[in-house]
Length: 338
Ligand SMILES: NC(=O)C1=CN([C@@H]2O[C@H](COP(=O)(O)OP(=O)(O)OC[C@H]3O[C@@H](n4cnc5c(N)ncnc54)[C@H](O)[C@@H]3O)[C@@H](O)[C@H]2O)C=CC1
Ligand SMILES: O=C1[C@@H](O)[C@H](O)[C@@H](O)[C@H](O)[C@H]1O
Image (cartoon, rainbow, N blue to C red; front, side):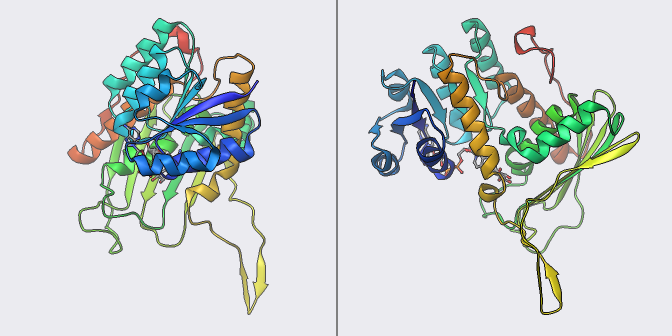
């Protein structure tokens, strides 16, 4: 069975995922596209022979759409996801699930009322081979109980429209999700320390930021978010346990020895760094839907948890205080593990 996907939002990542669903993933076809920018929708649809719909709501209601992919701007996600749930259609939503905890909870409640999982959130790092190997090592007990995790999320540059709050909401949100999953533990507080700012930033921006998280089991996480590091897109993660440590591998690349130097490449964007993870994420999503199963990836609850934690991180940045994450109890509907 071919899963017919309707895509809402034909921007940067919308294009990437349309290409992926068309050229990489078997068993899927993009049949419908919608964007508030009609020209973008026309262009994306023409490439894959899809039909253009004037609004997300019309696309969701269309008979030729079995499943919905939401790749529009974050503040519009909640409306599209709620409409898809109301129509009983599976919906993959890029991060964030919604920009407020209240909207995330509305989605969780609507999905629970539907009685079956429909929502998957685009936290693709859970599909990265390196993170998957780290999770296996931690779960096996080989490094003992995790105590401390050191992370870095570095981008070469960001545009002037990027704000200090986005360091948590847009950027650190990936670590927040993947660390909850890696450690099978919940983040209970956030603190942000701002060191000397880089001169390579727009003046309004606090960059870099060091985020400090604590989990329910007492694990301490330090995360350097540095979005004007200049040299590349660099993701680092090292978990230290009672009897060893496990570290995320760098992407593999040839090493070159020439002119008295020994060098290798540092990637420059997330598209190349996580291309395999995105491919696996969509293969697994489509395979589950084609088999009539519920999605198995990051859930609406994970989307809610991430938004609660990143909102607390923004509050910590603005106030200079350590802020507790005020999270509701996890419903049985979403299973036991984080
Ligand atoms: N998983 C990941 O690593 C990444 C996830 N993202 C997420 O994907 C989403 C989109 O990001 P980009 O593609 O970079 O943004 P973008 O600005 O390039 O594209 C967004 C598109 O959505 C359209 N749009 C906005 N509101 C709409 C609505 N109500 N209905 C239909 N179309 C609408 C815009 O016209 C635009 O074409 C964001 O939520 C972002 O956080 C983005 C980059 C990487
Ligand atoms: O989602 C993403 C971007 O929005 C964000 O700005 C980048 O820092 C992330 O690494 C990327 O995966």
